[in-house]
Picture 1: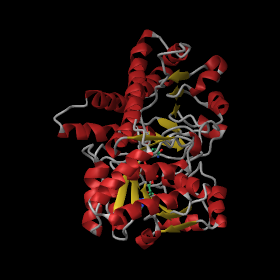
Picture 2: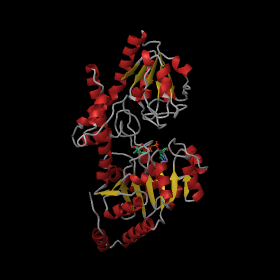
Picture 3: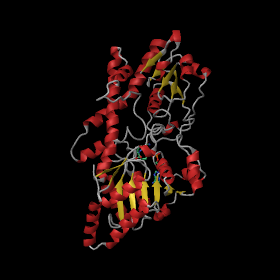
Length: 469
Ligand SMILES: NC(=O)c1ccc[n+]([C@@H]2O[C@H](COP(=O)([O-])OP(=O)(O)OC[C@H]3O[C@@H](n4cnc5c(N)ncnc54)[C@H](O)[C@@H]3O)[C@@H](O)[C@H]2O)c1
């Protein structure tokens, strides 16, 4: 971890002065002063799960915020104080409008007004499982077209080490003609958003920041000090990029491990959830991770492959990452195989023509996000086998377009009533939203296949047909 003191900063400035570049020193001081005194205007580009809460946090901290998104419907909603993200209250957005310190645009010309521009756009994989940086590069171009001398750009999108310096810096220079560290600063700060987790708010989650230039780092620290209690500086943008990937690789590998343990313990008659609960009583050296139907969301199934792709440039193979990805991807097959067996064994039903209710579509509990959700993979595979599926998800009443499964767009959730549940040969629990009526499922389902262990406290009495998978 880098600890930066004032001497480092003045040494750096002195060196620049010796090189005769007075403009640079003026720009550094002005930018830093505007940030510290809360006079800066901060642009947030990409107002999704990461960008919108960030814009709200910055505005609540008293900074002026300009939000940008290419999705005009999002801008329209925000301008009238409406949130389009389930766990972000419209009152939080309305507050910004009332305070008059936030504006929202699809037009990037306002970038010129900003002191700092933070990029929070998607970083998916392409169909060859390689990084798709097109959102980042498109956004950087739009921003760079309107940049002026004296601004700072911070990338928050998750990406491979080197993106900030190898991709953003030359691109901004090419489009705007501005020079890194002379006309503009660059930094990287990964987001640690955990949608739906009520135990943390933006302020209580420490923020890692990295920049290759100590002055840029100092300005970045000053900026995030406004919104979090602890800023954690590291020595370069690439290190900060690596920190984020390491956090998500850690999760992916550990989830793969418990998923594999589940498949090994099950034929031995051992319940992996009971094992994990008991192992968690160890006060040191163990951290619980939980198995499930496969990984979902915009982070854990994707981000690790940004590093395995980059590793190839150095002739290296990221074996753990590849293996964890494979194990986690196989979980949907495992769940379907269990469902097929249980249907045949307990309902005398063949898979073809069976009627299945998929319970929960979101990739994790208490959110309305279905990106990369294993539920979509499962529905797709079941329908290929000739099953008829319906879904229930109170957070996703209608399926919006996804990159992976556009064919499901427009499908609607059924209502969760006793009569509805009784219609199906089996209920497959994929997502364990807290506000689902689990007792109603236990009382009315003919067969329950539970991938989340959520039914552990609900029995069906005599006719217990609830199985973990
Ligand atoms: N969702 C999470 O929990 C989470 C957590 C940590 C990090 N991240 C990372 O943060 C980044 C953003 O993720 P997200 O979940 O907020 O994505 P998102 O899809 O919710 O939001 C991205 C937004 O960017 C907009 N956008 C796309 N291209 C644009 C452009 N050229 N100009 C302006 N706006 C544009 C989209 O319309 C969308 O509103 C990704 O790199 C992701 O890996 C996400």
